[in-house]
Image (cartoon, rainbow, N blue to C red; front, side, top):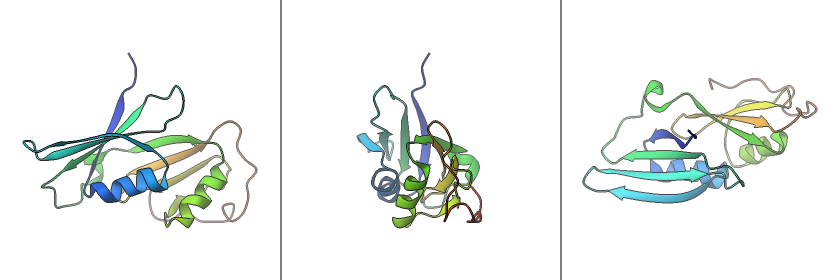
Length: 141
């Protein structure tokens, strides 16, 4: 058995793709529309060698309300080479760092639909550094 993908429901596919692809750095591998079912599926991956896991974004064309938290999942987790640089890049792109990497190891951000994204430092934690070291949490993650 091997892990295939995690599915997340999104209200606005373009906005979700802007976050996951343009800001977070995932790659869109395929996007398929299903007119009879009135939905679109978009599959994303990291592109890292040996990493076949994917995120499936499901866009239901007729969904007008924001999905409640229990309908779209808990969180996705990604290992990053430099947690401080990753958070700085995301923050510069307008992404709120809900749980800053005060410990040099872990941070949380959210997608436009409120999906919680955990970022984990690959290997040993980095030395705690500002502005993260003294930054408080923002909202929930």
